[in-house]
Image (cartoon, one colour):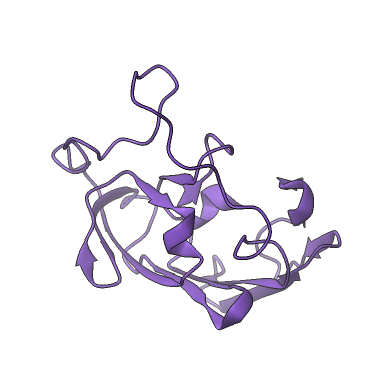
Length: 168
């Protein structure tokens, strides 16, 4: 599920999510405390599969990772997608995510308890079916195992178990 949103935890013991390319043109995560993470990638398509540019809360963002601490405060991510990779994006010092093979100290560990994405997280994904019909999927991902619904005959099912940090 994370990868389909355009970011995923490569090293779960850190505060970082590595950026990828979102699968959907728009998705919204409703977090505890009334905060939302809204992802926009309107030009996303089979041809436009590369992130050419990214803004976070209206500001240019060159890093190839997002911090958990920033996301739980709510954020708007605007992905400008392209058919060609932008080889200049994300190449600056500090743009790469944490790596165990580097000598630098690791970033802060992911928070536990209050402020962590765990309870009452609602995932909303808007996408189109192959026939061009609008589809809407949402689920309340709470501490119990909750299946992600299939609507409009598009997409597969999944289940999330946030307290274990796993999906299947």
